[in-house]
Every structure is written in structure tokens, then in C-alpha cells.
Amino acid sequence: MIKDGDSEICGLDVRDPFGDKIGKVREVWADEHTGEPVWACVDTGFLGRHHSFLPLDAATVVPGHLAVSVTKHAVDDAPQVHPMGNMMEPVEQDVLNAYYRTEEPA
Image (cartoon, rainbow, N blue to C red; front, side, top):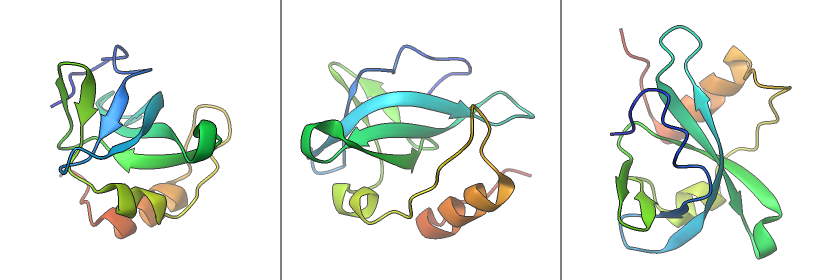
């Protein structure tokens, strides 16, 4: 699990459960109330020109990369959200939560 305030994952390669490279972590997005990391914005696609968000709820840092629980295919097909500044609108979070089937903590 990624620790609170862990910005050391920025720049790490991201690999799915099968070891396929998804991309590199560009930014970490934290929950505005708890400060816990919730989403990673990952540079994907040819030369990292696309950006996709993926959940960090089951992510772990292992030697050389960030291991996530979602597949490369799922990230490639994820809905595109475009947060303004450093804030993600609740509707954008809802879209991502619904797609990845994550639940907000109580």
C-alpha cells in the first residue's frame, strides 16, 4: 500500500498483475479530506503522450516499479478525465470509481 504523502512513486514505471508495463507515474492525487493517495496519473501510449488515471488502493512499490491491481488493457480503456489544477471534480472521481469499481471508504 502506498503511504500517506508518498511522492517517491512519481517517475516509477507502472506494471500490471501480469508484468506488462502500463507507463510511468506522472502525478499522485490524494483524497482532499484524508490526504491518502487515491489516484495516479500515468503517462501512457506512444512516447507517454497520453495520460490515464488508475487507482492506488492496492498498489505496492516493489524494486524498480509500482505494481498495481488493474490490467494494462483496463487502463488503456479507462475514461479520460481532465482535472483542473490539482483538483479533481467529484463527478470525475465518480466516473473513475464506477469504471474501476472502487468504493469510497466510509
